Image (cartoon, rainbow, N blue to C red; front, side, top):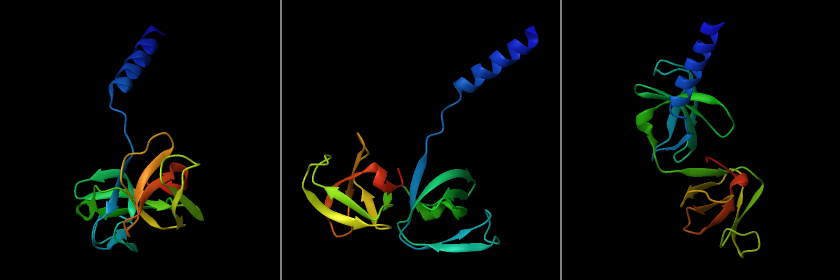
Amino acid sequence: MRTLIISAFSFLTLAGSLPAHALEYRSVGPNPVIMYDAPSLKGAKLYVAPRGMPVEVVFTSGAWSKVRDVSGELSWVETKDLITRRNLIVKVANAKIRATADEAAPLVFSADKHVLLEMAEPASAGWVKVKHKDGQIGYVRISEVWGL
């Protein structure tokens, strides 16, 4: 019994000393890329991801990254085709982008579902500052976008 307790304590101590894995999001680079079912150019081609599409990096192995897209699907992409710029996808029918991070703030613009927005600043207090491709900037509730 003593050995079991010591083993359990050792495991918990080791587990507590390992770094926590934070979610890592990236975006598809300036060109559309092919998403594969395996980390190889010989894998089955699943679909073509458009430029700027955000993905959650689940695992990286050599030159390949396993990623999750907005629909929750997993696929593989060459890591060189991903960039660190953070883009977000609107996941609600009509996201309201406001002048400040406040529900009562003036409306700057609305964005339909699946619209791509660039993250201008890190999220804070339930809001994230975003930029539309036409240059408009404002704040959207984090619950209305995917990629954070």
